Length: 163
Image (tube, rainbow, N blue to C red; front, side, top):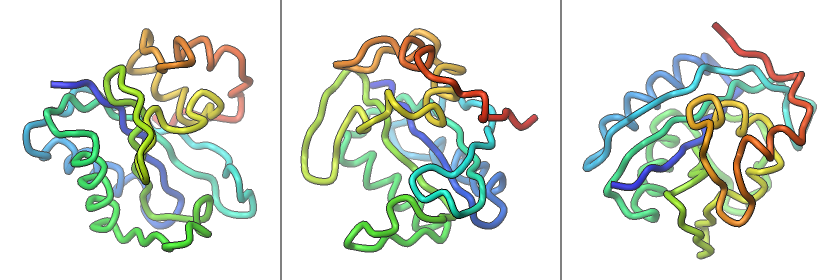
């Protein structure tokens, strides 16, 4: 089993309910166990800022699935939640019902078409680091160092825990 960390985000519809369903779907994946989930966090939109705030979270999933199989499962969960991705990627930072990102897969570094682990710019994104460090204070981002050190270099004051 490999510990993987999944980033969840969304800003369209009942995002908290979509995330609850996504946590359930992650826990139901074959050869996998949902080990931990962060609280939900309200975060300002990033990239394209003229849209509603996002809700973000992170889940730890211990899995025997390969990184590619796990990515395919995440994309299927997104589709089930009503997410559509444009083939040209032009909707990359736009509104979405649910976004699932494979942030970390053990200590692996993967650079394949459509699959990059650790997630690119993870170490620059407080909206992913805050919930990640909440559930994995000592996690290391391969090639970068401790996630908590990356977070300490930022000012995440605009990220608000919900509940």
